[in-house]
Image (cartoon, rainbow, N blue to C red):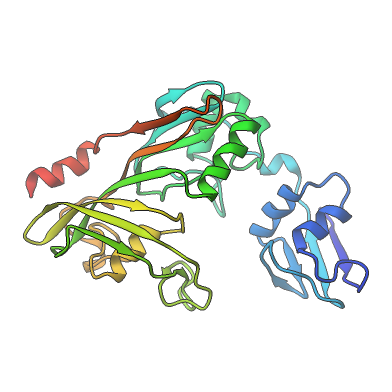
Length: 302
């Protein structure tokens, strides 16, 4: 596909967000699609990759390479999924460890979204196309409860609840070392590590507010079994906060001890419950998932 090039002038684009600017100047290209292309690195300002929130300056040169829309759509795949609840507004799924939530760089198959599209074809009508209905995520190795929107009304309503921190999220985690306090609050701002871009850190040039509550459920000689309630929803928030507190999660190969080795075969982090206001009925609902057998076996051995 051809590149489109725009020159930012005082009256054309200056001080405007780049996603809004491009959506206004490209026929039949939505702002959501522009944002997807920005994430993929197909939008450049003076040759540099930028974020969707970047505001333009007079004299800058903006280049965008459009993709065929059909290439952006994930294909339905028959992937076994455990559905906890479904109605015309939402789907609640118990995500297994090892399953990526949605397509991203270098992966367009074998994700939760591919499996959902196979079982619920109506999701394909929702935006954005590469992650239809997705309002929150779990890391690949993290298991547990997720809610997926099934209608535009539900999508908007759930996004607002997550944005306003009205969703109650409870995780079960095993951390290294005994924790002295039965309850605690971690409030370090976090952001992308300045040098190691795959990592999130409390040592960052662009910190964002993050808040995590924890409660000690059981203390072991070398470990602490915790219920964790992240009030904000930053990438890797629980893992980064616990590591910064001196209690990295067992099995965490990115932020943990001993290269992630320990008594658990994988990251010991499970989304045990999710409570929110049903976007269709307005009723407060809560969905739960028991600790998976592989993690329960770890506790039994301890």
